[in-house]
Image 1 (cartoon, rainbow, N blue to C red):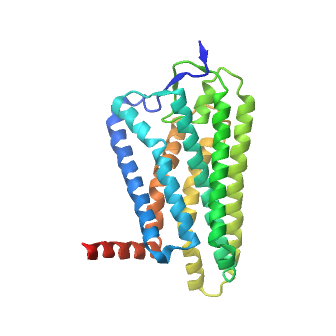
Image 2 (cartoon, rainbow, N blue to C red):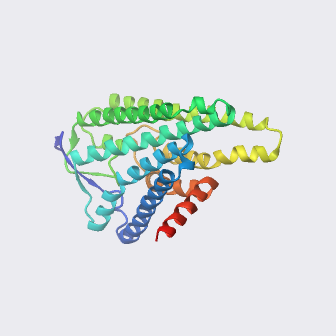
Image 3 (cartoon, one colour):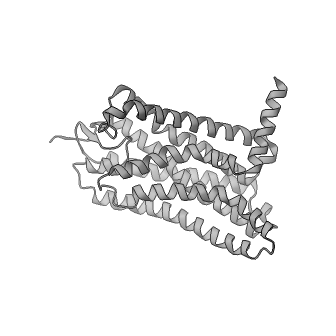
Length: 309
């Protein structure tokens, strides 16, 4: 079979279910619209209400922005493929999609770690919190995370661009991901896979260890609070974040806790759908439904709009 460094691919992740294309299109379109509206609304509420101009909600607004971009990096192309029944994608288009997908996935990962650190500072060092989480430091944390995410994504993209691939091959996925692309390569990918796994492990496991360490200290601090009401109040600020962490990492590990070139099963496809579509869609609703500050700010924003009308 011929090999090329600029092949054309076909995203065939849903080609095995031709009788369900219409249903899948409707479900994924609804999730996409809901994700866009939910994240945009949360961005609007946090930006409009001065009471939410705090480090915690600054990080949450960044997460909403990243999630909005995250679902946009994969879902529109997938909807187009389901609508046209044609998953063709060029090599440059595939690399572009992979690059932006990796940037926003890495940013999700890093922001969840930063938000855990913020909760640790707020609960374990409340008197020093204003000094620890200044606007400048918050900006450095987020800006540094964007830089790290872009650098790692650029490395992934450059590694793939140096490989040769079988021409006109099907990618057994609904977006361009590292594992399926390594499977189609004519080149020896062992070094590339090792480097990819090392970078993913360094970023993913490092961020998760930061989250776990933060919550170990948080739970110890909460255990020392004398009143049950005080404990509930302290944990209430962490419940939404913990929900997002559990959902994100369980689905990501189900997909990526293995060598990149191993085959993708239908179960892994479901896990990929969960973290690329369901998690970014649910995040704003988890925070708005379980957070009194956000709910009150939303009511004030809606009341203000009604009074202007």
